[in-house]
Length: 128
Image 1 (cartoon, rainbow, N blue to C red):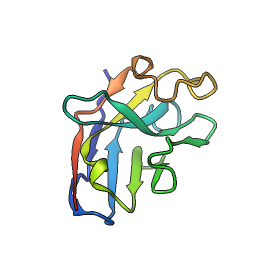
Image 2 (cartoon, one colour):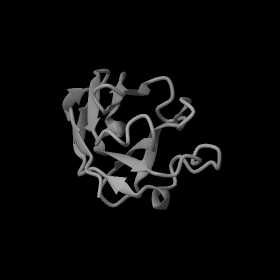
Image 3 (cartoon, helix red, strand yellow):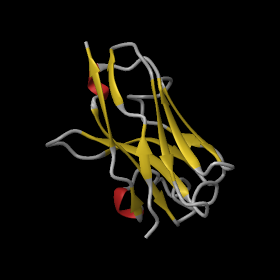
Image 4 (cartoon, rainbow, N blue to C red):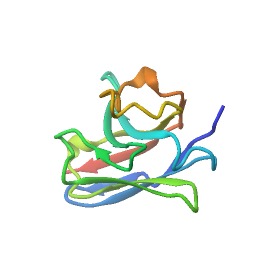
């Protein structure tokens, strides 16, 4: 099973920024569908950013304009730049990958069962 490793989490004050990284095997970045999710204890995991295989991106309204997903194919790293962070962004953040290349077209870019591989997560805490 492909191993995804997140890093870059931490504690920041509201209005601050963090950039998360997800190191993946070379066969995934640039080929598979990849997304970032987050989860707060006691709540469902939710998608926050998706990079479709056609190069387009998807964001929910809650983070649109503040979060940016990108990738570096040469380093096999997926990024999540998070700006203007709010206390409500506090969560464990996960990167995930799916061998299915049609998730965005099917409206499943945040469909959790469609993702085959997950990282262990990195904690983001935003204080007011």
